[in-house]
Length: 169
Image (cartoon, one colour):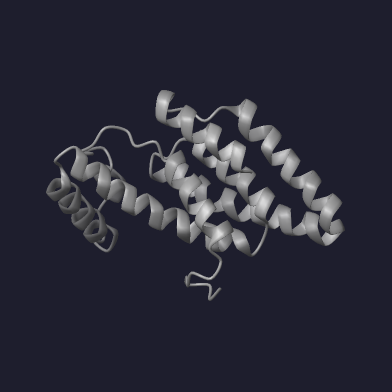
């Protein structure tokens, strides 16, 4: 999985793309390895991990302008790490994405504008009739290669399982 993450980070950073030639084989390799190493329960865990990642990132793809490559990479990761570790990875990916986004905002001198956009976006989520997705079109930053956050969060979930999250690991 680590070579897949490294290639995804490179291609996403350089070209803002995570390619199918990377994600599809990674997905199928995750399924096969889970079956070989864990039998049918391993395969079911792998499928559950991929399904949960698909559900979460499909929502982000449809409503938050997340890239399709990010979606497919996260599904492949779900197939590799399975359930329940995918839940931990999703939280860690979100936290890594938040930290990296703030660093990006600092780098481009737009931290206050980003924080203001976040505030109004969150406010619009709880305002009847508001359209929170309208806020997403006014980004203060250039496109952010979210594959970096996906890789960071996944590695944190894999190598530091003792860190507390909402799922009590």
